[in-house]
Amino acid sequence: MNYLLDKFEVFPWNENLDTGIAIIDEQHKKLVSLLNRLATALVRGNPIETNDIFTELTQYAEFHFETEEAIWLEHFGNDSWLSSHQLSHSSFLPKVIELKEGEKNKPQNEIIESIILFLIRWLAFHILDSDKRMALLIQYIDDGLSFDQAKIASDKKMSGSIRVVIETVMQMYDSLSSRTMELMRESHKREQIEKELHKANKQLRKANLRLESLAVTDQLTDLFNRRHFNTIFARELKRAKRDKAPLALIMLDIDHFKKINDHYGHSAGDRALMQISRKLKEICHRPGDFPFRLGGEEFGILAANLDYQGTTEFAEIIRKEMENLHIHNEYSSASRYLTVSIGSITRIPGKTDTVDSFMSVADTRLYQAKELGRNRVVAGD
Image 1 (cartoon, helix red, strand yellow):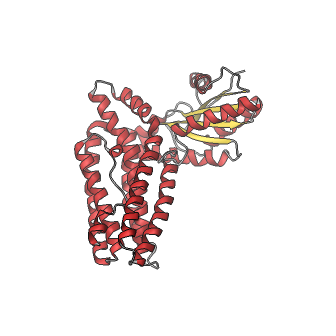
Image 2 (spheres, rainbow, N blue to C red):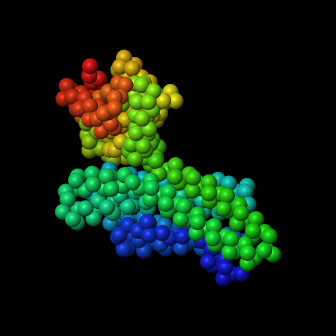
Image 3 (cartoon, rainbow, N blue to C red):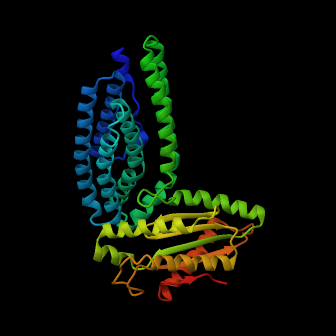
């Protein structure tokens, strides 16, 4: 029976999780191994073994974060990608401790199950999205691209990562299902274990669905990300053509965002991005409004059934609300507070209209707003 439990894995390693950096991949496999051992100890019902493995896992996670950040620091310096990555690392252990300490009234096995589900979700998404993106950048630099070119190439390469996430999650679930069935057939007399495994399967399925949701969300701001933007835009464009209804695209870029990072620090820059994102969610309250973080300090809003006047007024409301956040940017030439420049387009799309054609017009108008002095809206004719 113990042999079968040792074969049971809640998180089977998958080649899609490889970053190509040997030491990072080796440590990721170690973390996954510890996570599987933690789940096995939980099924065995051994609280001492469970606590020992939990301690080993958290300590090894700290060691891994230090190793990984040293590698990223060598290549990324003070770039915002590194600061966002460090922010993700720094939130990891507090969340684990919160789950462990915040539910003391629950049985120990339920607390550990909650932690395991969090670890599966966090680790898989962190590797697939953040670590692989940064590893790709290093690879592109080694291939001869400049840092900025490598960032663009990495973002483009990762545009299909939601497909990889879903494939990996499904492979994880299929592997778990086969092991669960094997365990259930061999241990039909162990009714309690069967019940626990059934419960774990249901919770893991929910965790997998949550992981798919995370794959379309920007980790820092909790807005939809660029990949989901492309998906939603294509869908809404098709709908607008079919219904002969107007579709608006509003693109905004923070004015002199680099000055915030340079003078107030990258943590202040991250806080500004989060404040802006919360405000965009508040403003975009119609069912047909979709806010996105497109990358860096650039955001986009898709708005269905909004005509030219409505789009222009909506864009101006966004501009004013951003400035009214009173986020200090003393070194900006536009205002003492953070401001945004906005370019927009709205029309009933024709047969030849595409996502790229809408983006091109909105982007051109955005940079016209920059050239005209920033902190303004350019909506066109």
